[in-house]
Image (cartoon, rainbow, N blue to C red; front, side, top):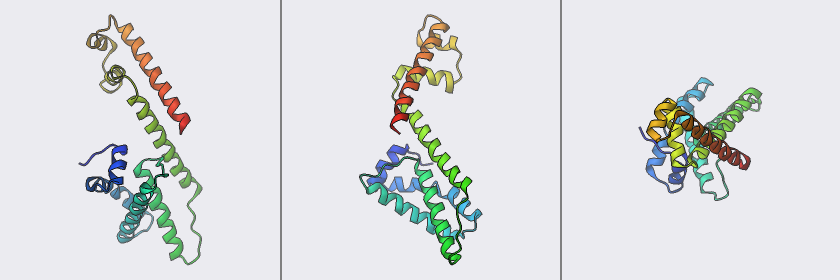
Length: 181
């Protein structure tokens, strides 16, 4: 499966990289499923997705544009808006509004994406030793005694203290990043 970090993907899209465009199509099945669920035809779903891709590419070419959500969230929001717009035209003037809770869901998803990327950025700014220690504990599930041995700490209490310091550094990085959002 094709994989690329969001920041890399955005940069590659700006460069018109073919691999980056292929990656964008991994988002299509989920968005198509959503559109079909709300009454779009397969052709409409495909057309709407292509229009959303066009909007994304045009936006990325604007040097003043800053993507504040994930690419997936951005495409989803554009597709949802375009389908609602298409439905309005089909209904000849009957207003079809996105329900308040659906708008809220999009806003929540965008906000969660912002928090995720802020946390990811905060982690990436840590010293390498902190990254390794936190991964060992939280991702690999290692015990403090094992971490103390692997990292050369004199005891598991020292390892626990170091883990605490690393978490505090990550929190500080996160709060600084969150303020700038």
